[in-house]
Amino acid sequence: MGEESGSLKSVADLIPSFYYDLIARVSVGVPFLALLLWKERDSLKGLLPPDSWVAFLLLAGAGYLAGLLLTPLSLIWTVVIMPAEAIIFRKKPSLNWRRGIRNDEIAIRNKDAGLNLAKMQAEATLCQNLVSAFVVLMVADWSKTFPVLALENRGLTDRCVLFLILLACAGFQTLSYMSSQSRLYHLFIESGEEPR
Image (cartoon, rainbow, N blue to C red; front, side, top):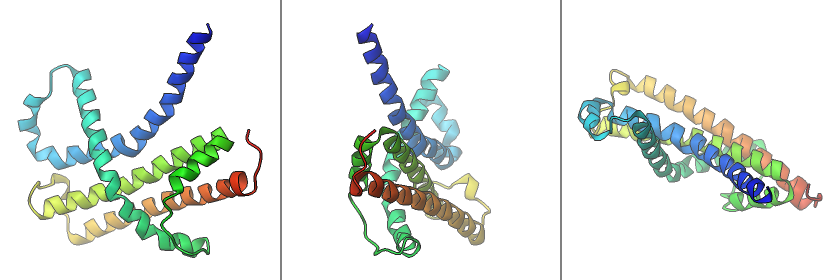
């Protein structure tokens, strides 16, 4: 019985990590690949097996990899958003490489706070990855490497408006995450509240 509950606990601990990968990477990577390769869909049909579950898993895996590759590009948006953080929270702007470590420190003190921060970080990464994916799609379409059907007949104004909407979403989610992390770090680490 004890061994069974231990394996259930390890599965339960794995679910949030998987869920956050779905949020941050797969949910961006799949539509990104669909938009990028839509015009080539007929030539790609022969590559997918007829079993729908296998095709679904391959698509999800490819989407995960695409999202994983978009994530480093998204660092640019964190750097762009940093001045807004400095203005809103009245602090000196700095690219804090300890943000991930801070999440771990908070999670050690309070597991629920750590899980909430991980979720917020995944949501911020999702929005940043959407901005990066849109920029890559615009560059691919502009260079005629991969003409993007969804961008055909869309002028510069439409593209700029969509870019600004995506950037605003990324800014909001990133600032929400940074604000919560700073507040929780102060509460649990700097002020020394006892772990729960």
